[in-house]
Length: 104
Image (cartoon, rainbow, N blue to C red; front, side):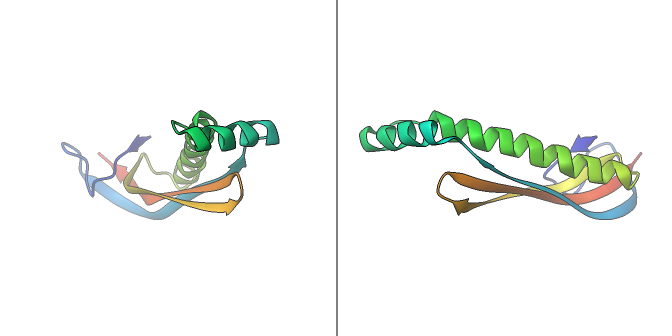
C-alpha cells in the first residue's frame, strides 16, 4: 500500500477513486510514566514517554486506515493527513485519513 500526502503519485495514474478512508486510536501511558513525565516537564526536555505514545498511536492509526483501504480494493492512499487531540490527561487520539485509490 503506497501512502502519500500529495494529490497524486508521480509516474502513476489514478484509475479509480474508492473514497475516504480513516483510522484512529486513543492511547495512554501508565501512571508511573505520567508521573515521570510531569517531573521532566518541570525541568524541561523531551517527554520520551509521550513521544513513544504518539509514535505507537500513529502506527496503529495508519495500520487501521490501510486495512480499510485494502478492504475497498485500493492499492494506494493519497492526500494523507493527521489530526491529534487530547482525550484525557495522559491520553491522546491520533486520527489519520486520506483518499483510497487504485493506481496503475
